[in-house]
Length: 222
Image 1 (cartoon, one colour):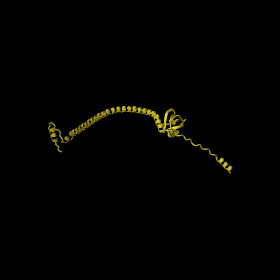
Image 2 (cartoon, helix red, strand yellow; image 1 turned 90 degrees about the horizontal axis):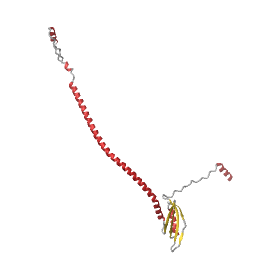
Image 3 (cartoon, rainbow, N blue to C red; image 1 turned 45 degrees about the vertical axis):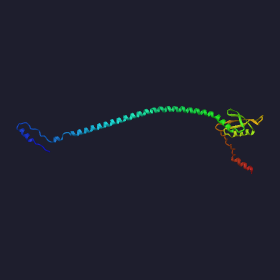
Image 4 (cartoon, rainbow, N blue to C red; image 1 turned 180 degrees about the vertical axis):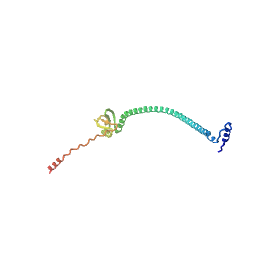
């Protein structure tokens, strides 16, 4: 550190009645000045950081905008798909309703068809039907056969079918003519799903005699 001493000159001038000399200047005063370059560097870093953060926000906003636009396009596609799905559901409900109606009609029509198929299955050779009448729940068939044995076979076949119940054979009459022909009449009940299982009643047990009665009976036997 270098110091310049001007006190002597100042004092001499003062004593001579002259003007005071310049104040002493110290080199240490330069060291106490503010560090402007450091402040400027800090400010520059702050400005750069703020600019970078602002740029990042702008990029993020742009990315979000693009994403939102893409999602809106996808939503529009799904809106069309939703309308199509609702239309398909309506068509499905209508189709299911029509199928139920067709099935119901088919079930109603299938009962006579199944009955006729069963009657054809049980009909033995040498016999035929002349009429089939239904008086719910009884069905009556009339026909002709070439022998009584054929009529008996028809009766046995009807009894063997689980869908026929309460089979009753009516009068069998021989028809006059060059050939041996018999007329017959059979009535029965038709169960499309098979005859219901018979209800078996529980066996009734005899009441047990009290112990005293048993003992009295044993004593009487002795």
